[in-house]
Amino acid sequence: MANSAPLRLLLDGSALVANWRWLAGLSGGAACGAAVKANGYGLGARAVVARLAQAGCRDFFVATWAEAAALGPLPAGARLAVLHGVRAEDMADAMASAARPVLNSASQVARWNAAGGGACDVMVDTGMNRLGLSLAEARSGLLDGLAIDTLMSHLACADEPGYPLNARQLAAFAALRAAVPARRYSLANSAGILLGTDYAFDLTRPGLALYGGLPVAGATGPSPVAAIEAQILQVRTVAAGESVGYGATWRAPGEARIAVLNLGYADGYLRRFAEGAFATAEGRALPLVGRVSMDLIAVDASGSDAGEGDWVRLGLDLPALAARSGLSQYEVLTGLNDRFERRWC
Image 1 (tube, rainbow, N blue to C red):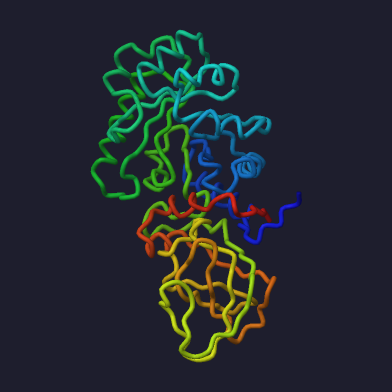
Image 2 (spheres, rainbow, N blue to C red):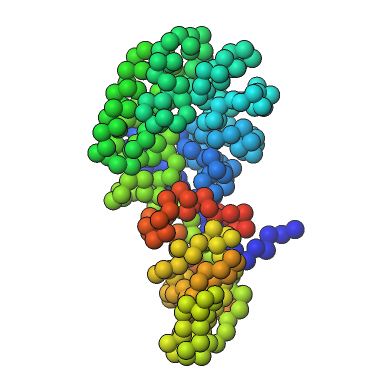
């Protein structure tokens, strides 16, 4: 059946590629990869990989083996790593896949060795206390004999450039590089890239900034990749003093032309986004009025010719929506669900 969803994400492939090239330039001599976990941060991992691979990206990262399988065959020359490693339940998929596991614990290392696994990546914890071997484990001989493609760690506070933990993690990882042989070494995510080329090592792993997010407050460079378009389901005239939506939180100051759109919090467009928000039609701003409900929002279309069946656009300014809602930019972006048709241009 043809997709006739009254809700879509407009996705700018040129902006995505430009963001990757900007991050690659900041990575110095290091290769620049791309995190495409969570279905390409909600934008569609297959489409993201195809566009970035064509632009020259060769290293991609997903969280799980299910995400690896969902990508299907990779473009020629592309490589894939699975960040959550190998549980016992993953071994059959991992052994049959061309993707590399990122081994995160002594038990995962033992499991991979016992199965005769080949090339792998290894995560070492340098201060985040999330996934990864301890520094002592990494230096203990546990990794002897492993075919380590990429030894990596992850920065906890890279979005706060002056935070002392950044320098401590950098020093710990540099010392580890001298002690543990691997083909490549990788530390920096999007925010880590902005800390400078000392953090880049051989491979960077950006995520948020690829998709238009600002990984560090005040940073400039990434361009928005996604925008929402919602279809008008109905236009109605509301008399002065009448209310719109649940709780009667908005009342018309005069006679108003109200357009009801197919968009709501079940789609990931939350009530907390509504303050100061607006849609646009033919260059005219249409302010949101009343509460966001599960599947619908209303905008004041007074003075506009927009009518039933027309489409209006709502920008996805990730830093602004995050500031308005108290959510992170990651939560805003990955919260947009499968009700949206994803349309690349």
